[in-house]
Image (tube, helix red, strand yellow):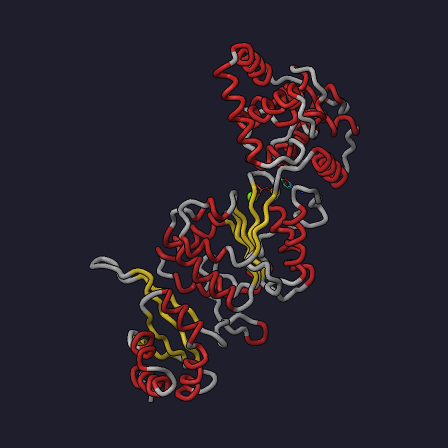
Length: 472
Ligand code: ADP
Ligand code: MG
């Protein structure tokens, strides 16, 4: 005879009732509806994700005891969470989550129990090998500099002890092409090198979203969720892509909570700090604050040189030092762009059967700079402005408060703000480590001078022309 879920649940309630206050019983247990009992798994429906979390946080022990008494130690509890109330046309949208101790889908003999993966119906063994990591993105190939020291160190700590450090989740943010994907994949590769049996998965937020949409279409949201709940280290890239996608955020929130609660590691990237992520729900943002947020800045000249050297070394290509310096100096927007220029140069050299030298580098850069880079870099602005005002470039970054130097410095900051994508903080950093309020003040002063001083105004116009005619 199959036990009936209603009877089982009402027996559970009898036990629970003796252990909590009447008020708590009414608030947290009365709204629960037993749905089914299959293979010793009791599914209960709860009215919201908040409910689910509250129960898991406060009553999981009690629930477990009640279920143990009724169905035995092997029994499991699953929640069916009503995420969306539904309407006449649509059924309520629910997801099921296993609970507490038995929360993790079991893998007897190392084999997955649940092979229902909505993406490609392979066995999990195959999936496990597919972490979607690029093996070239390692810590070894990730050059350390001031721009990435904290993020790199945090990543390294996470790789050594995934899920155990307080860096969970680890959120890495920074502008495009600054190494976010490389760094988080390095963490994944490192973990896989250390421990074989961990399930590491790298996924872009876009891919995650598309998988979820597919799963909804095919009525396989449960499979989708189950798949993600088996992951030990979830790396999810470019989280800003989830902006405004409410349903995807909803499911991610559940997966996030569940993985986090059971000590699995979550690693995320974003193109801006979490507080600036628009269109992401507050409760999701507040989760991101549980761990560590570390940023990647634009690398300085020395780091850019080191990055090119390392790449060339890896590819077995020899480029003269002065060419590397020239390229690193000229391209200060981001690393991806810098790499693009280096690759074009190599291609150019091999096509024209010429040696790589400064002349060829200048030509190559001239050809592509207009295409790839409509903005000028801070280094170039500083050089141009200091030449124009006839001062020593280093003084722009020094402490000196001499009037003509202050004006030149403020002018260079003004152009850095106008012509580059650098944040105020980053601009300050490029001017001898000043803080962002100094940059704001500089922009203000320059605007004031433009309004009140005709001569200064024409200097600015001239400088604009020079900066726009960016030639090398
Ligand atoms: P993002 O994800 O932030 O847009 P990527 O991780 O794709 O940037 O990095 C762009 C390119 O720059 C990649 O080829 C990457 O290997 C390289 N790169 C970024 N940071 C570093 C670094 N610190 N050392 C070496 N290469 C780097
Ligand atoms: Mg990326």
